[in-house]
Length: 107
Image (cartoon, rainbow, N blue to C red; front, side, top):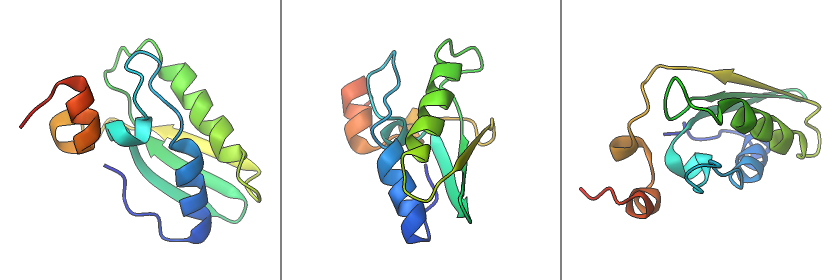
């Protein structure tokens, strides 16, 4: 689950990357809980995210899509996406209620 963006520019990046879907699942990476953090320092977006698994075949594509969408925000000239494995992604706890329902995960 993403940490709450703190600045207006972080919210702009958040809204831009929100439209990036996992190409295999067809659900927003934000809604899946794969985006852990968005920080903006000057003209640089720093994003921490994970993949659904270590061997995610769509990982490089998703990372590039996140970079590209962050760069669409006015004033962002560099996007650095850091792939992290901690905490381990758990859709039961990290995905939004809507995403869990779409994946057939019910509490």
